[in-house]
Image (cartoon, rainbow, N blue to C red; front, side, top):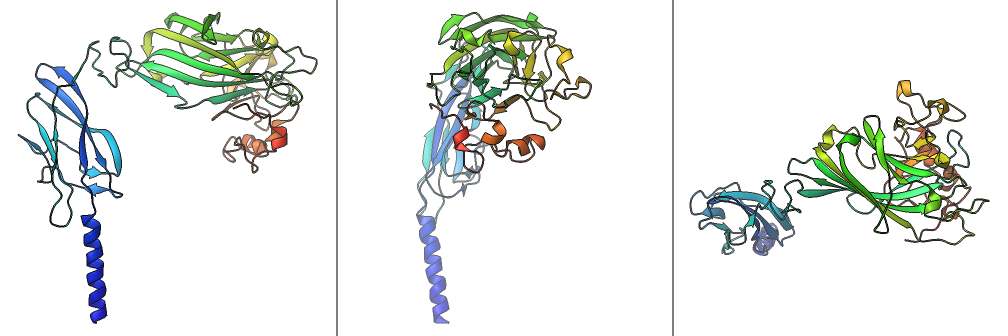
Length: 409
């Protein structure tokens, strides 16, 4: 029995030591907005250096504001780490203090006091009701913040240009990486569209064109401009029915030497590897659009014109052709496109001619079918994308490294 009491005492001491080891949570003032005469909004956060989540009820002697109401909606659950702009308080700019005390066994931790003041308040210079530092364009009432897709890095588009035939099915005829940036206004509407692109492979005898259809009326385009390595280049833009098309690459031969005769660019192990071609464009809209009203967002509806023939379009699976597409090509050879049922650019077993892949994809070498380079591709495609969703990842479970082109990054 004495041993049991001894164990309980030891456990109690361990609990007490653990509580006593808690370090104070530090309140932080992140930024203040000047809303109007005698009206300010402060955004606050905290730093919790403890390894555990700590709860401190609001309005108590351990978590309160003064003077006035002690409970101003402050945070009560403090997760480990530093957390900015967790909550905000609105006040008249007079003296305001947040007191925070991390509880533990007596004696208590001392209070951590934070003076909430307006000395560094941001002014809404452009009167768009979005304040710095969230407002990245403080002098522009039409622009407030940026949204990226993908949020970091780049995704890959890869095309097979022998549609409506399967062809060699190596998906290196055109390989382009992309990242889009939208500039939103204070109503979360898109005002501008920017795209950063990298052409990585032209494994095609044809000299193809690369275009992107946007679900935005051409009449709503205020301005547009294309760039190659930061220098302006001609990227025509025009109406496509109720939508718009920008021709990013009019001819792959404009950027890369593709002599044909079985010599291709960045797809053959026997040939040199060249630096990627960096392209970009920017589009501004007259009337901003709500992204929720658009049928699709980035990368929108990218496609190639095979050998630059208008109407001979190759799109991502399930994406509709443009108003310029030649419908006489639908259903020929290996294609089973049926506009009446919404079926586009797939074979009878759902194999596509274009891919949109998360991350920078390592594509197959010349004349090596993607189904041989990536062992789980066929099962993924035939299932409609329900299985083997990581088929594109470069590892021994997914691919044959001998059939994958070595990348320069």
